[in-house]
Amino acid sequence: MSIVKRVEANDSWYMPAIFKGLGITFKNMVLNLVGKREMITLNYPEEKYEYSPRFKGSHILTVKKDGSIRCTACMLCATYCPAECITIKAAESEDPTVEKFPISYEIDTLRCVYCGFCEEACPVDAVRMGPEWQMPGINGANFVYDIKQLARRPQLKGGIVSVVDEEERHKAGI
Amino acid sequence: MVSLKQSLKSFLQKLDNKSRSIYFLTQGCCSIEVDNLCSSNYDLQRLGYTIDIDDPREATVLIVSGWINPAFAEKIKEVYSQISGDKAVIAVGACSISKSPYVDENGLKLTDVLPVDIYVPGCPPRPEAIIEAIRLLEKTKENRETSKIIYGAIRELG
Ligand code: SF4
Ligand code: SF4
Image 1 (cartoon, each protein chain N blue to C red):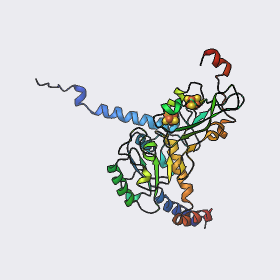
Image 2 (cartoon, protein in one colour):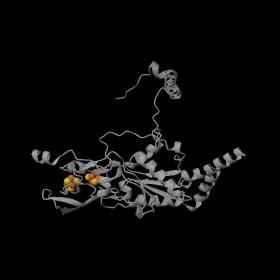
Image 3 (cartoon, rainbow over the protein chains, first blue to last red):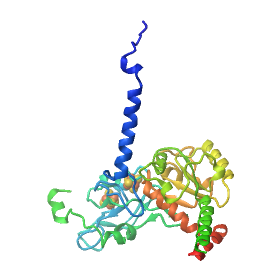
Image 4 (cartoon, rainbow over the protein chains, first blue to last red):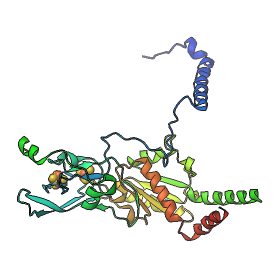
């Protein structure tokens, strides 16, 4: 079966379509010149985008109200991480109410894919994805972040306190 | 006298601009973010870089991204040997920096193939991070031998 498309009047008269297209171009040019519309170009070093609170950037280790690390060294994040970039060393705490705590917690940011699985896996809200994107560095810079960098870097202004309180957590049974 | 000084300065800056042409050798998801630098949203040419070049012989900076297998490594080596002058390499994304985090077999790091100057971690990184990497390269380049003379002369002219 062959299909023959009949030529319509609009198809044979192509000039109106050309002028319609040129009209759109001209309208956009005038609007940009007059400044009626916001330009979409980002003047990067001066202007910056506002990212949503869900943005998955550099990791943050949250702290308790007394300032110690929230993490309980359960290794769930290190097990779940698809890039295998989290290294945790657990140690026994002197505080009898705390079972164990991480004596070293390292994230290799050159391997991390910023998927947010560690944040999902953590049962005590100890690791979060922060709002700032990962900064580039020259060859030889330190890309393996330790507790000092993750929990107490200057951008955090003294550390993020976890909302899950110890008593509330025990009441809820987590 | 002022106009002569100005024209000399602009000539030197043009000479310097030759060292600011960037060749993209990208694949994978990072190539979307790197190509974004040519788009009207981020427009790298507004900062004085040349990005619309087809020939690596005109470039001095190479941006590599994506998963590197042995065939792609051959291509990277070929392109790197054609780049002229003060060469610089920027590795973008987790795949090219430290193999693919997802695939174990057959992958190569970029450091196995070439000397890398700047790392941009992320999967994929934001286009702003890549602009930041190029600006970081500018700072390190000021200390190099050949561009020292040009930068010094521009600073002398004020
Ligand atoms: S964001 Fe993903 S890849 Fe990065 S440390 Fe967390 S789980 Fe691992
Ligand atoms: S960050 Fe969370 S999931 Fe990872 S070891 Fe600490 S408590 Fe466990």
